[in-house]
Length: 391
Image (cartoon, rainbow, N blue to C red; front, side, top):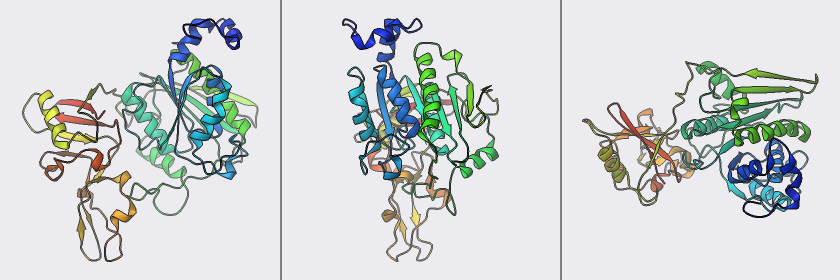
């Protein structure tokens, strides 16, 4: 439609008083990341595609037979959810551009979504929601969240809107309530997540009919339009509960907490080097040292990642120095020749380090350490800091 005569399919959309042709054109210039494309995300994406919007679909999962009755997949069992969803949505609107990305939102680079206009979470995992909250906060992006009661015992859903300056997902929580949230969102015995990042925490199946997901997805879609049309103040800091067993819907205001577990700061990103495959650790230190005046050493801080510097076998005492991001270390890399599994000590898990601690890896690229593309580091010298985009 942009730059051409109006297509007949858009006639009624352009006749809506609050939308019009200018509003529709604005929506089509935006890029919306839909994170999770199951029951909620699939129906949300359907509404956005009808508007001809640009979508980035993100999901780590494969279609399973159990998904067919609640998530609207036509089949495609064993295929990536994002690929099947994109195939189903594409014929609905020739103006919509749909990019599928099979990935876990917790593992993509912090700066990978910096060009998005809006993030929309359709997830069933509280740890993944925390990742979306952090991405949105650091990139200064608005985001929408929705959740369903996955127990199958009630028809309950919630939708919340978070924007720059408003409350965030973490604001209602202190450390104890956050721990309960993460614990209650998981099943299985033992810890929710082993130190090996490649092991996924068990997540209970979501027992919710598609109609419940449709109710929440419809409100998400309407709120998304308001945000993208410059009316975000009407929805930011608000949460709506659907209790469809009692035929009730209630709205609540989310209050920003002065004691929030995150600092609500947006990063101004400074691109470094020629990508993670070409940029070394030493080059990154040099870049930061040249741009952070003052005395003292520069420290590089990883963002939501941990570098494993050493593994030790508690049985035979053998050691390895993998220098690998924890979420990229395979279990086979932690296997000892004696048949046992090596473990890191707390001092061997690095979330920040200076030149001295990094002397063994100064010549290595960030890609060789397991950093994802377009991730972010924060360099600190004294009271000054610089957010580095490994573009």
